[in-house]
Length: 134
Image (cartoon, rainbow, N blue to C red):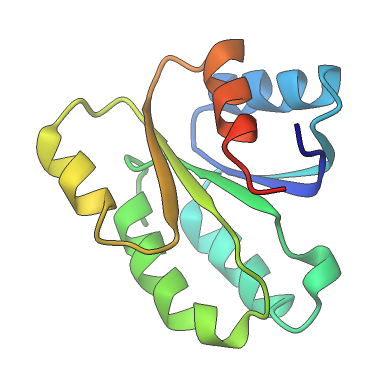
């Protein structure tokens, strides 16, 4: 299993943030974890470090349903930003949505590497890390 340098969690649910961060640390999956409670802050962070690959995430775990800027809006903006980022960053959607339309919509984004339904648990997190390219 690949160990990554920078994990980025974009989720307004503090419990989900805590669970992902705790498992990633306990299993030594990520050396650093960045947590954003809103997608706009995460996007601003990506913009500010777009030229510095070492500060960019190796993996983004993104919730779809968030206030102000939801995951879909984040993905739209991320697509616009991606030509200026010199790094492929896989995005895994983690959501409470069981709507088939959301699964179909997720496939329209090339950066989306997977779609997972909450609740967050160790198996889900390990599954995501196992899907990362070596």
